[in-house]
Length: 92
Image (cartoon, rainbow, N blue to C red; front, top):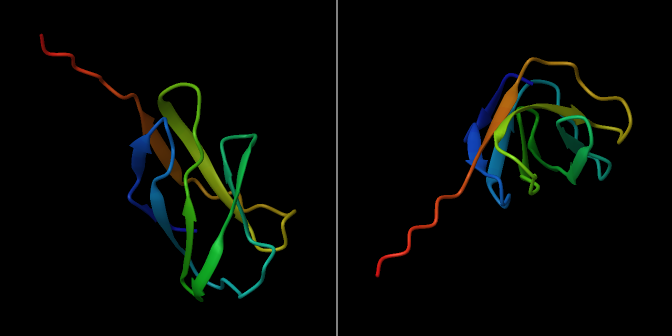
């Protein structure tokens, strides 16, 4: 894994992310890990790209992202996703 596009999104999740790397294979067992516990399904696009949707998280900050093509053995790349808070403005 070499990059995420985009590299940031809101803590509410639902950001469509493209993961760039090399040697991806078409399997139904692709799992993307956000931080140490949050797991989502990844979808194969081609040998260089996987797509997924970011999960919601409780607080803003940077988390590492890793991929498992077999659902179990995750990469250990130094790629991060930055979660940012949502600001709600009320105008009276």
